[in-house]
Picture 1 (cartoon, rainbow, N blue to C red):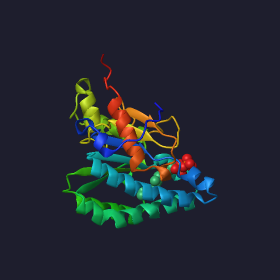
Picture 2: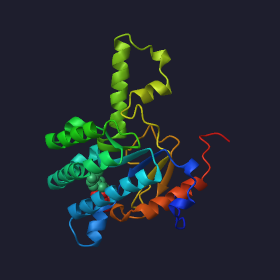
Picture 3: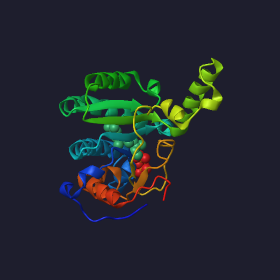
Length: 247
Ligand code: FPP
């Protein structure tokens, strides 16, 4: 899982073997700040700059889908000031990036319990999603108030309701039907999952969708993650043989 590949440049990558979908667990903002005797919010601010860098890099490289774990269902339990700071950072990010997303043909989508987010954040999200809805080069998916188990519970409730109304026969339920009732219904499963800051966990992220995803854990703290490291990871990804459970 964890390896330290040598450096790579964009020209070294095989453009026919790029991951169509990269998902990232952005971890380590707090530790980044602590190491510098700063408060945790400064780490999130720097993390927000890394988000901008990685979105640009993925667009440049030719990745079609990028999903970022920006706020989990568990994150609501953090101190109120930290939750508020994250929400205002998110709003600022959407406002400052909307024009660039429009210019660069990037579409914004959200997965998670959007209705739990503050009104102002919901408005900014809807506004950016509306402005970018016809964009086709890359889709940026923000996971907000997202939890994999909550997503699965929601899917079971939807399917159970269809059974109750006689719309679905329980014997006809397939993996495709399950996938069709998740937030990610029309998004391909991630090919590559990156987690920063060294933790070997999936932390309730895209539990159904990562069944065959290649996982890469880097010790780098999220605010320090950059284009060069992304290219190194992509080079490593291209050297792996994906078998999807077959021989
Ligand atoms: C994990 O670091 C990171 C988060 C909980 C939130 C991720 C948010 C950002 C990168 C910034 C804002 C997002 C966008 C999309 C603009 P942590 O606080 O858990 O770090 P620690 O484990 O070192 O304490």
